[in-house]
Length: 525
Image (cartoon, rainbow, N blue to C red; front, side):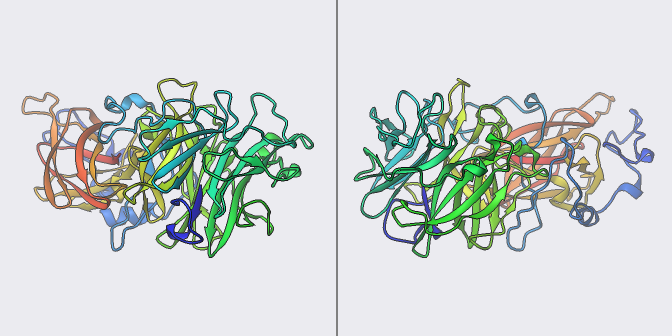
């Protein structure tokens, strides 16, 4: 997809796009009269003190303590947004999954057939989607007027891949990128170069978005053989200049994988300048599994946001991350984790990635991506609402984690907590006016799912395990209660409730209710 600066720059075209607590606080006799978590006053740190300690940062976290990503609303207390799947843990900890497509649940496929590496172009009122080879076609093509209901084109929009291409199964043709060039349509595609043996990017032209596209030139457009070749073309325009994003395919041969930005002619048939390196795989972000690919660049709220995929696309470990910059050519700073993964979709979508961004019929950002559904052998097409929380992509249906210790804590205390995410939780939510207040972001208005990760060791008057409750308010309005079945102290479990959120930032407050419970984090999907 051709992504434009703030959705409007350039000539007219389609829409753009630990494991320890201090030993002296561990003792907790079962017969304790208060039947709630107790700990020594010297460890009952105030919220502000703990926040200061936490934001001091540290080195890479263990699998139970993923890196935190701070996303600030103007004047807000810093929340922490961490993709649920950045945490390596078993999915059964969660509540039973809801049916795909239900409010607050992961999205259902919008095209339930193999349709990988989607690219979307809007021409008038019609969206055209293109995908990697399948079903005997080099490039697949489908159309829709709402991004939900799709009609598949039975023809191959790239019937000939070009004389420079060797079609070596299962390679064929990959990762299409189509845009309106003002005089017709341009297709960038990936195929294997006959001369150098590497995958490279070619270009083809057509009079209409439905093709047929005809290759241009005697060879590939971008083909840095010494870097492993080039794949995954994407387009971005700003100030009347078109830029091509691409990945150097170094993972083919033990080299780095860089995402590049390179100026090209307006019709995309010629490079007009040298490529600039933006980001590569790196060790602190080990979820990337040694490679980054599939770049998509947008600009929102004055900030450049580079979306990318990483990992092995053949597995459920494939995921999508992001990086931001104040300037087009960087430097780009990666977020501290992916924003879409198998676990952030509660296991309902495996290996999400290959994303594209387009403006939906109502003007809302939408993200289209592939993932593995019930049939894990296919990468099918999904679409979801997309928002940007100070640069961080937030996808409706993909869980985002907000740590309790970095929320607003009133008449309660942050403590070190065994088995808690980040090794800290909020306890002593004991007073009538105690509360923990979270600022959370929603990509679109409507019904969402709030999952609260809690611990409850309360006992009733007879000494038997007992349930606890917190009151819930959403944007200052009472929204019922959250029930917490007994778990025992330092045993954490998630419970879910539906919440109605507005687009953008929202305030969720959990208040003292029946008996006692502690909070580790909340997740919003």
